[in-house]
Amino acid sequence: MPASKKRILSGIQPSGRPHLGNYLGAMRQHIEMQKDFECFLFIADLHALTTVHDAKQMQENTYNLAVSYLALGLNPEKTVFFKQSDISEHTELFWIFDCLVKMPFLERAHAWKDAKAKGKKEESAGLFNYPVLQAADILLYQPDLVPVGKDQKQHIEMSRDIAITFNTTFGETFKIPDPLIKEEVAVIPGTDGQKMSKSYGNTIDIFAEESELKKQVMGIVTDSTPLEKPKDPKKCNVFNIYKLLATKEEIKEMETKYKKGGFGYGDAKKTLLAKILEHFKESREKYKEIYPQKDMVYSILENGSMQAKKLASKTLKEVKTKVGYITR
Ligand code: ADP
Ligand code: TRP
Image (cartoon, rainbow, N blue to C red; front, top):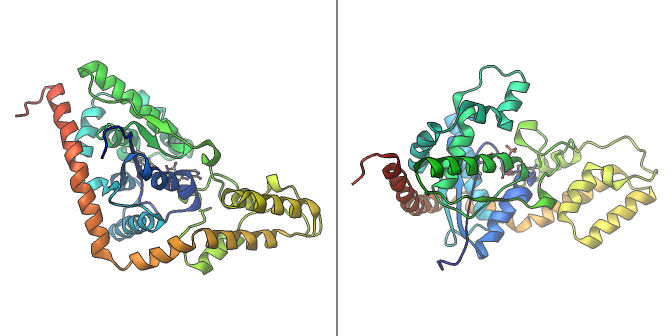
């Protein structure tokens, strides 16, 4: 790989099936960037343990996510694709960082504050320490950029702070990475209009069976404007999702229909469903083709882990020396 290429790194939790928000906010960028960047991408199964406490579910989610990326066009020759739990350096570096960060710094994290605001009193220490592990994930690979959706902005900023703290305490070691967030797809709305998220049950799952996908699209929340009346497209969830996948002409056409009246939300939903099926046609077929090929999928991840380990162990060795652990 030419040294001039900038390095990107990102991770995604195997906490459920990938949805349109994951795809547009993050996965699509990861795949597009393979052309021009040196890419590291991992399945964040250590982070997923903060919420998934069922071995079968963890395995299934991990496998589905790996197949999803491959079906969407991830090329293992171009991207180092691996499982976080295969690289023990992540948890080792996590501990070193955990001894540097202060509790009030972690108390400011949105995910922690949200959990507290919801009145959850007995959250795991893992959830509290989540951003520290994420900093270890990132900094081990010395990336230039971290492509993510907007909800991850704070986590990347915290990783930068942790890198600076380490560098000032023990000497220049880590590159300070920048987040890469595409503004136009920063927050994809879900079927109820709030941010699409597995935790809100408002997702459109790109690899769901057609009947289920239909149920999700038909379930998009709309107001009660009657069919014949003109409607404001900007205020409609169906339109707001449609415009993320449709061409300029298609968007214009739907906008005109909304404004004219005589076009119901049911019609709009049918058009959206057809658009989703068309957009993901090839990937959905590939998903079905790859899914039974377990050996191939596992070998891709194992091979990725071998490559990731080389870089991660190099960085960790330097860190251990810097903190004063004897390494020979
Ligand atoms: P979820 O909120 O469904 O649990 P994750 O936290 O696993 O999603 O997110 C995986 C990646 O997808 C992250 O980079 C995140 O920023 C991005 N992402 C998730 N939901 C959205 C959304 N609604 N809009 C834009 N990006 C999103
Ligand atoms: N916290 C991220 C999410 O929920 C997943 C993640 C873990 C990650 N480690 C990372 C993303 C490192 C980017 C870089 O989506």
